[in-house]
Image (cartoon, rainbow, N blue to C red):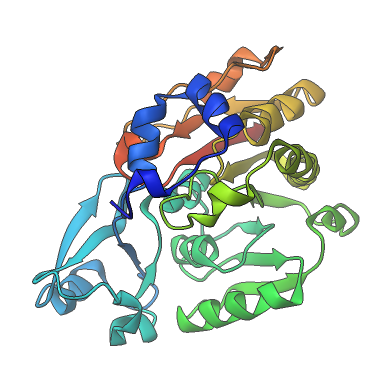
Length: 313
């Protein structure tokens, strides 16, 4: 455990809400345990086999079932956790990335010949993953909206040897004026982060329903922008590390109700999943929402995550 559960105070409204959404005790217990470290091999610079040979002298690697480049990592003698200090990390041979966070680029399935947009790219975990699937070919636009967020994004793209990406600095909604059509768009939206309590306990303190509602407005703007930027038959991935229905199912419901040509597709991966929320606080969502991927921390011993795959028909 990170600490005694008696030392952590959850807001009563939070407890009431999450007791309705999931097994509260299982969620609380998992959220207050250490998150397993995980890495993604950067195949732009090294093969999976070569990196394993380098690391397995001192580290134990366990394959992440849904990502062939992904591994949970633990020091063989349990003496170290500072994988970011390894020379292989500095060389860009791997990216320290949470296991559930690897899912959106996998589901996006970017190809070398495509034009792809990552609309909220910083710090670059998913952007660099997309680039490696594109084999540094095609065009990848990595966007974010503040100068401060440009710094880690640009550093990580350079460290990982990404050469097919262009970095842009603007509000995601501005792309509608650019006149560009994309084959694939990733909207990994800014969110309340309630799936990330395991690595950020401050989330418990800052959570409030008003913040969730405000974020939902921005998320609806971003998902609509991303969808309108797609070519015909293009693919949009909408994802968050939030577990709030208002930031997830409600946002997807908004898009599918507004656009008849927004079609949800099944996501089939080797992992345990929980049912999507089809009704929340008196609001009933489109039945197609059940195709969304909702993962609670206790499902796979990861962060909580939400992923939706949408095709523009």
